[in-house]
Image (cartoon, rainbow, N blue to C red; front, side, top):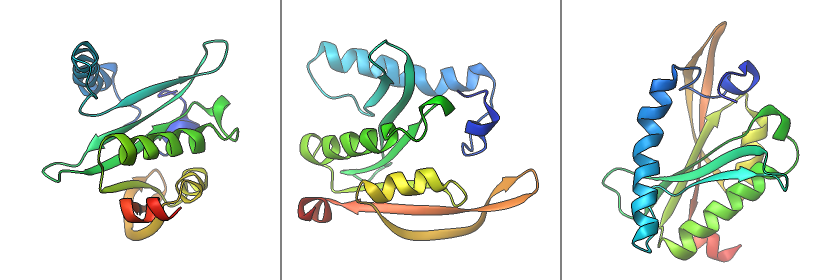
Length: 160
């Protein structure tokens, strides 16, 4: 997934050497192992998505916003063969409900490239509202793309 140009065009951190991914994910994996052994939620819940045959269909997770208790960033990545099946929307809704119902979240935020229509639709279908735009934020091969910021508060989640 992280070597496919159709996927990585929407990921600011990819493609990167495997060491970059390991440096990011290994602490999450270790914290998850420890949290499970203690019967607690990990600091940054991350979920691997598989189909009924066990094939990798993507991942989704939450990252705590630094120094803002109850605020999380939501993220998801899917391989190209998992696009347009409702998987990202289902994962986003699941992680959103988990954050508000289990982790006592107050606010969730997600961002994406403006040209990433699929990700924009996922966030909208999961109840998030567009809250901002950073113009020419991402450098592309042939120019720049805007960064879109989406958000959802606990109060708005409860109204849905």
